[in-house]
Length: 194
Image 1 (cartoon, rainbow, N blue to C red):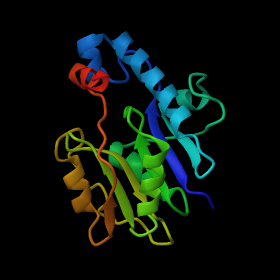
Image 2: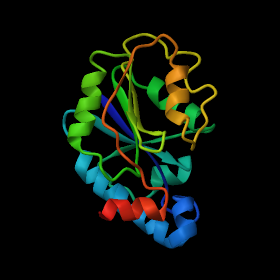
Image 3: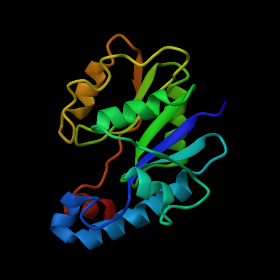
């Protein structure tokens, strides 16, 4: 069974995606950036070494949207906070699974391959972001259930998200892969251009 790469994404509608960026450049501009970023990302990460799936939100609209390329299978994210939605994706596949965000311009096939390589040795892998969060989380999923504490007490969208998630892994082994940055603000976009 091939490893599964899950891209978590939202329908690129103004006011629904990249709202912090939208406060600075306008909601339409932020949605436009996100839509084109995701299209570029999907071209970059498509690879026969893994099965790529889009975990979409909102569930019903995302499953039927014409925005995303038809060659990628789609699954609903489902309800709950980010931790509940990611845990559902991690548990849904028997074998290695890696979840990535869609707003990280620097992701390459090499980053994905290295993250899956870490899962050959560890129960979990995380890809740190410079702001204290993370751009990727993966689980080896070789017959053991996920830790019951996974994502408990994680302070999402803060500088503590990575540390809190690592603490929630309990005794499970983990490794880190490359540090990459997402785009949340106009300053992030400007850094990207340099």
